[in-house]
View 1 (tube, rainbow, N blue to C red):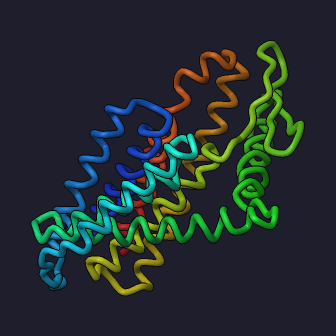
View 2 (cartoon, helix red, strand yellow):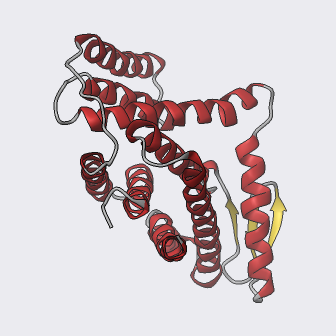
Length: 276
């Protein structure tokens, strides 16, 4: 089977999620390695694509716009004295992708993917978080409470672990290691869902991978994997807090996301591929 198949997409999804988690909350060096590996896979997928991809000539317009986008974001954050967050990271990546796309080099294919990837992510982020927040409709937080916190508590209660929902998105750990754990935005697995969705859609747009029906099937499998992996991750972290205390839990907190994601994603994807 050629690398330009679901196997390549699965590997790319795992690496992108791993890179985002490690860069934001874990070890920056490990995140950089994952990011570099994901770029290599994108390049290989593009080279092995069965569809003809039009050649891109150098465009100084795209290079200047990309550089300007990066500069404006950094200047705005410096002027407002704010930290670089998820939205800013994607804006900067969009600028880098524009510059790569306009370079007219062998990296233009990666740049094309990056442009679509960041635009789709930013659009989803705006539609599902920024715009609803303007009218006090916090969709991700509702998802985090009812789709993550509540199921985790029900699961742990069923095996005899002392936990309960004490407030919206807050899990109270009962017993000797008493603690209150707030399931925050970064803990929902919500960013991972947006990343995987953006990755699959942008790859198909950029490299004309498959018909949209098959793309939808792959996207469903990956989305289920993201959800289950994050559910197991949060349940494990709460259980570790219950058994060993919050300090121990926080030491391994950043790395469990991508580990569980791979452990759930790979078997699910293997079954999916065998069925095709």
